[in-house]
Length: 254
Length: 271
Image 1 (tube, rainbow over the protein chains, first blue to last red):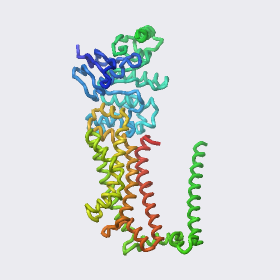
Image 2: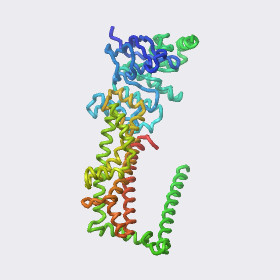
Image 3: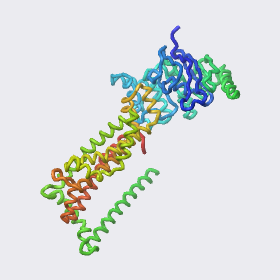
């Protein structure tokens, strides 16, 4: 049995400036296997985003986060973050530059190789024709695609996605979900995907968890529905209902 | 339809400006020709023709055997030296302030104090210390640029959206890498506005310093205009003012606007 991709041990997170504040995450334990597509759901303020930010290394925390068995406390390109906001691309770089520059900074010295990698990643998200555009010339959906292409090109083993499609319109959102599904099947990455949308989680995730306030995991289930699945696939409604019950049970308990 | 409306609006705007300018020149010429101000009229309002001739004479004959070109060259030499050193220092010190908190708080105080000191007010002190040398003017130009530029850079760093910093950290950037890779390009709008303010102050500081004490070894435009006044060459005086305006326009539209166009505007960071 190989080592899990990501192991989180006793993760506790409080904001230091207010010791009276309840813990955002209390003693959270989680193991994520290689190539798993883990969807994280839960009500607002349950600590989903904080969990992702701790893994990314953007926050101080107590406990331990291991990637491939090695403790990680600082940000690094092995865990690349795709944010919710469209403004995550560097506006002073072209679409291509937004990918080649991070490649250069993470140690790819050969310029033609960087260009090749960037174009390959852009082709995967269907934006090869937009390589020379600047981010402000793109739509929101295109910007998110570039951010995904950046994560793909960087060969990050873990991709952290914090509601990347939440600010998109329904049509674009569906389109990007489908693309991400195809990509995740082909790319062999481990993806942690935070979302508010149960349907999105059932379509995308190979495993879904629901967090309660304080970061307690109250639902943890492998999603065995054959992919691609749609709301009319057999079994879809049952999975959806179970997750919804978990989220609502949690809300009623308060 | 919309764009053509916009275009015709622009043309009308330009037309209005040209008419305004012609009207001002027309009034000037009328006052000059009609000698409305009595016997001193010729001194205060030389005719446009006289100013035009004086303009040419400034460059062909100049003053004391030197054409105005030489004065302009001297001024530009001092100005450029000061701008280079001033901006360089601003980047260096602000960069240190960005990574060191103690230095930041001290530097912030220094900027706040020094920014309030008009360069010309420092002139006597500087002369006492350094003597009457062209270096004094360079010093004043540096003083004019350094503080507003530093303030702009530091404000710019403070305003860099957290998301760019995190995206930078995510690809492994730290310290100086983060400074050059993220903070500098992300605060370009502030840096450009600092350049504008710095240039305007330096240009004014330079001309005033040259007027107050012209250095014979390195005579500049300010000295030239003052000499025109003492010699009652009033048309030449006005003509030199026009030269000063022209240089300002060249810097604005030949240097600063292109910089803005190729950075802030191109990257969609300002309209």
